[in-house]
Length: 426
Image (tube, rainbow, N blue to C red; front, side, top):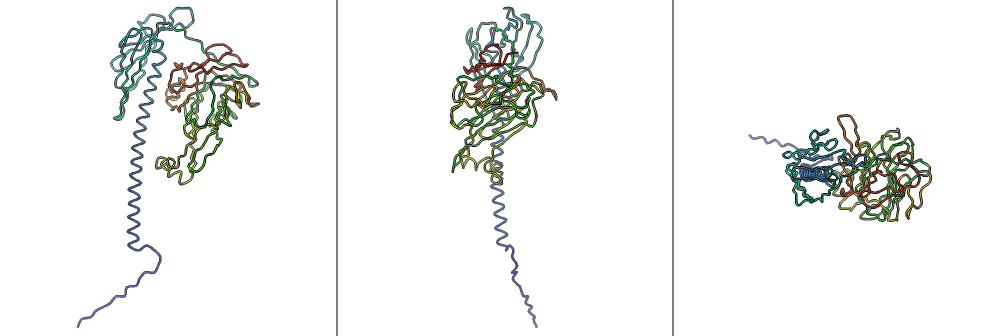
């Protein structure tokens, strides 16, 4: 006899995943993981490529910045060296000789006292291993072509520039500072104006000294463009930005303020950079504060950052400086001016010394800020050596080195001279 035993199978009526649903969920998670992984890898590759390109660009500018000013002062050169002479005290005698000497692929800067070039008082290598070659080619008696080859992580860059060589012995001018009393001293900037809502990049570097808690260093009207100031002893950058969204546009006022105070009576190099909503403050070559505009906010903003800004790009989120109003600028006072030497805000005058100021229409990296301001970090030691620019650097809009005791503050980059009202040179 055969017995058949039947088992009763009960259906599970509790809420949960069926096997089919579980398989679908696992498959969906796998698909999302693969897609997200591909996006992350793609974004990493793009980031790595851009990082390498940025390093090449920075080194290109660093090398040219080392050479530009001195090449323009060269009076003797060949395929292996550049040489220029300086009259430091204005007595028509040569007080210093500087020579750039090629040794293989190394570029060495030699400095000599007087006209004797047998024993240098200083010798330093000024290029890194990212440079694969550098050549000086003499085109004629007063024309020089420089070729620099760079390579990094499989990417390469070639720089070719030509220079006209003079036959002058240069006078090394004295460096002054302009002392503002904090009451009514200021400099009115001529020729340079802001009018628009599409200024996407900006950098300002200045060397200052103050013991005051408040005062404006440089301003083109914070309520319409920007202002660099001291606020309760800290460095503050106020700016007005024009936001372009896919659904609407709007004008907003923003501010970023440093962590450190700088009103200790010591000299400080202060800098700010802006690019499309990303603002950074540097003090003495160190990044002090950063503000990254994230109008998407929350999880969407985080996810947009993870995807490399794809959502922002699709929504056309742009953050530029400017209201569209016409504004003129000042050193030492807060601008509200729609004409040269026009209206200024009361009570915001700067008290202290301004040694020099650079105004760029592009965003500078930390390395570039240190280079253009002469900052060196030796271990934990901060060293600042006044750096003279040629005035021909790419993106340099205004350069006030304050070298001449005059009622005019000369712009060595363009023709944006300032007229000095009050204050005195030290």
